Amino acid sequence: MTMLLPDRSVEELTAGRGRGVDAEALAVAASIIHRIENGGVAALEALTIQFDERPDGMSLFLTADDLTAALESIPDDDRQLLERTAARIRAFAEAQLATLAQMDGRPVPGGLAGQVVAPVERAGCYSPGGRYPLPSSVLMTAVTARTAGVDEVWVASPRPTAVTLAAAAVAGADGLLVAGGAHAIAALAFGAGPVPAADVVVGPGNRFVTAAKQLVFGRVGIDMLAGPSELVVLADDSADEAMVAADLIAQAEHDPEAVPVLVTTDPGLPDRVRSRLEEQLADLPTADIASPALRGGGAVIAADMADAIAACDALAPEHLQLSVRSPETIRDSLGHYGAVFVGEGSAEVFGDYGVGPNHVLPTGGTARFTGGLSVFTFLRTRTWLQIDPRNELIDDVARLARLEGLEGHARAAEARRSGK
Image (cartoon, rainbow, N blue to C red; front, side, top):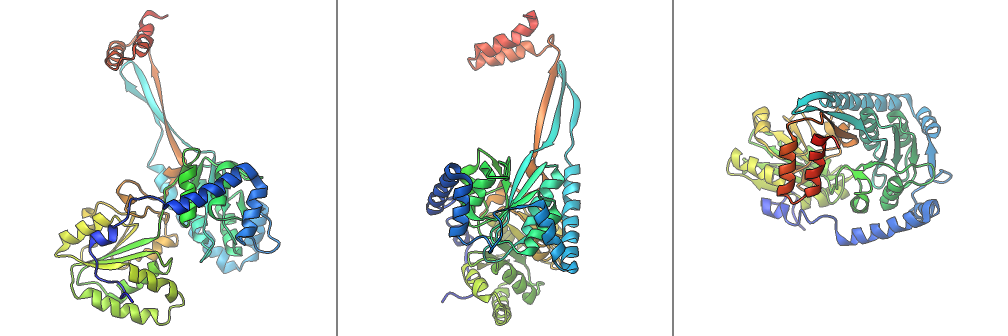
């Protein structure tokens, strides 16, 4: 059997990335999407029964009143926890929103130009409910959509617990679709029963959810195509091996396919961490999930910190934990990650559970070109232009149009000069 956290090269850890969603998942998702598009609510209901996604007696569509009833049914401590977490997510999202403003009437040659920032009208927020219920993902997606100003927000989740339903109520969702997988994504994208067709569909999920998001993209917007969760711990010889092991296990217990990685300048650290992993796995209830992930992850030994930083940038991980002496300095040297956790006290799990920044983040190296879910996911930046018909741009526009062979464009510009 492969050892925990085996020594690996960056090339081994990145092999196979960038190939997109696998063909089998795409084929299965395409078939399901076709069923929903053509069969509507009846097809959706049949699929939720086939995959055992609805608890006995639970309706396929839950209203805001149903969600409020669930919120009122849970213990006060749990309710207050959800409300505190939602408040932290909302506060950070509001701060993000404040960084993007409308632009009113910036002078341009011949007139004015500006931009209008507007939210989409409807959002669909998916929250997994398979191995673990994830009310945190309900809060991360739906609270952020509401903060962006989205008018109508629906959540979809299979086998939702009372806490998941309560989280949807705290987030201000208009309703919840009790369904999962590709059929839930299709229902959010196309609409089904009371669920309106969304403008944007967001949220993490398994490979069939990801495949469905890829297939509906274009008819709706999506946040990203997320794969198995990832954590890279960048550590030097000051790192606490027990804490490094705990962070890697926390990531590994998400999924046997999760990718926990240690990048270190200390050649002795991997063995010390492996010993701690074995100790901590001994009484871990989720060891059967975490152990395969730890065997599939790896340890990269770097020649020096510059080499370690280059390794991290090549991995471009979803989560990057800095367990080093000068974490702020190292942070400024790193180029590619979904979210960075600065210093050994800044555990990645704080990001998972609503300190503020969103936990829906890019995986599989896609952090090289995209960021995580945020209020910006639900916003459109639209520009406007108001030009005096008699302006100095006419000759330049007409000439450039003729360089491209587009005479109609040139004449449209020149028509402004003649007033015709």
